[in-house]
Image (tube, rainbow, N blue to C red; front, side, top):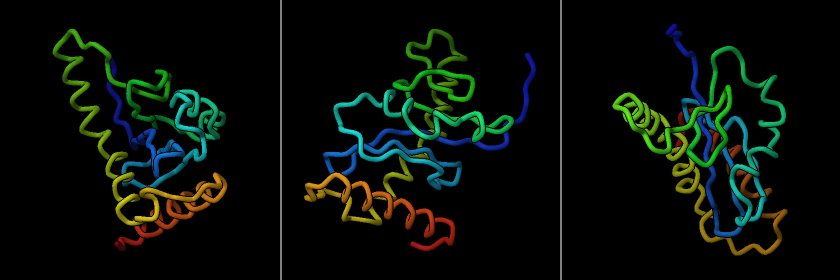
Length: 152
């Protein structure tokens, strides 16, 4: 088995913001959103949203070399998306799952910072989905600006 050093990790997550629209987000190892899909109803399975996302449709041009995604068990395993073992039977598989979850926390922290920095995303009472989508996208862009410039 050959081992190669992997330069960069990105993380993927499906998170409900405000209770009525779901956001699928992909962040880099620093918690910067590199892609997101906003506006799908909460009843749509996260894997379907992901497979219909811009990122998934264009991954061949977006994933370079040894870059890869860490996803949770809801996402389809692929050559560029690594997910945990559903029922680990060996110590190595268990170790992999533990390591995976330690790195996967980056996406959880990114969504946590997003929601904590922009309390308008909590309990949105806006009825028009386009307003929710635009507001959420603006908050993600501002989150990236603040994270890139080390501001809070």
